[in-house]
Image (tube, rainbow, N blue to C red; front, side, top):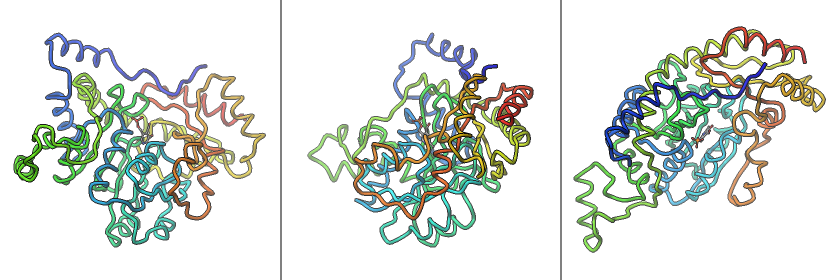
Length: 389
Ligand SMILES: Cc1ncc(COP(=O)(O)O)c(C=O)c1O
């Protein structure tokens, strides 16, 4: 048996679309196809505006760079179980990451600890919806509203997941998606920043394009700024600290075609995930995830308490290796980010309380591939192997 983390999810049809497009000898830099993909994505998610960037990490960077246009400094509440770029985007934008432990049932930050972590300097909660699970609660939305802070949703691992009757990525003022090939859909590399706010949208467009004013679509705003800066050529007016985060027309064509199958593929993956959980040994493995509205792209395996030891861990990894089941320890980001060597470069940081659950997934949490083409039989086989350990 062989079970890899992710199959090649670029289809012959995707490639055909790109080849046909190339035959028209188009200009390939960020242009009409990117705009078309952004519009289609906004319709799919049900937001007003989307900005296509070259990775999910770039989406993270752009969001925090937006925040930097409002605040010079301050604190951002973030989980220690996330992707490295969530934390580095906070660092690069001169904010202080404040780490809050996660829950095991949704792998997102604990509301009560978030509430304790909020103070006058808190600018935003940068929430990660891990591995297709919803990280939002009514309580958290109330806390955010009461404290008048921003919510940025990292939905890079949870395309199509829902909270109540709305997709994740529509609750925050800003939301981030990744189209890295291992995720729910791909543009080879790519990401999206989404918002319902016109001002945020214009700023994100500017930040994506070197911070240049001409990237804005708002003519009145552009004229106002240009008039204020008469000594500067308005074509090269760098308004905010920005980056070059643009993607290309080719990636956008992949995105347009992949998007057509996204919901259908998510549905298949959700069925797979539920089947996987149903067949896991409940004594050995934690299965009490809040799966309502979830949109999973990787099976989650966390050892239950009596099995959280090195002997079982070694056996587990040896068995999976023997049966050619590819796995990653520490869920999708390596587990506890605060233990990583790069942290020594981040002098301004705060950890609230103990990171108990974070350390559980760091040491005893795994993910295994879940893709739409996966057959029932294979899921049964994987579970049988895991249960035999
Ligand atoms: C939660 C989360 N945020 C951000 C990213 C970054 O996305 P990308 O790999 O497209 O840069 C990832 C990565 O895969 C992720 O899992």
